[in-house]
Length: 213
Image (cartoon, rainbow, N blue to C red; front, top):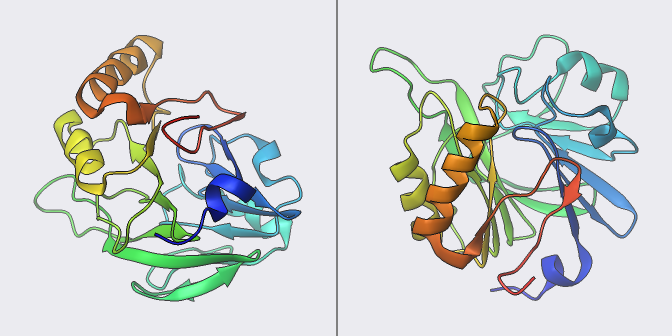
């Protein structure tokens, strides 16, 4: 694995649903600021990564007003933005962070669906946000954000995803459509089946970045 850039130099803040913010050396990179994410997620942001076109992952109106580079899948249908188009396997720099684009398609909800473009983003080779998919990263990661609930997801699949990636820390996300009782149940299952690497952080808080944090 590369050096301890994530553990030593990066602060990672989780926001509602699927949004996160990585800060390092005075620069901020935001992933998936959707319509449910807090406005402060974008305060002072230097660049934004969008995994796919669904509104719970991208608030086009807010981003259009922000005026910073927005990176999105080449096939994403975004009508109010002119993003930097990214393809699977591409490596690029955003807000000073090295980013590798993974995957390619949104997870399928029903058999008849033609899934939209979806990219997972591996940041500094250590943090992985898969968007709405369970595509495995092409390299090892220390910090994994794992979807907890979705119309395309079973809890057993989320558990298998964490086990396959094998991170030092897995943090639950994509929980904006469940109430507190459902979230408690999901956290219980993920914690029991994934072991001490799994945690959940409340929106607006820094997430632990290693198993010993």
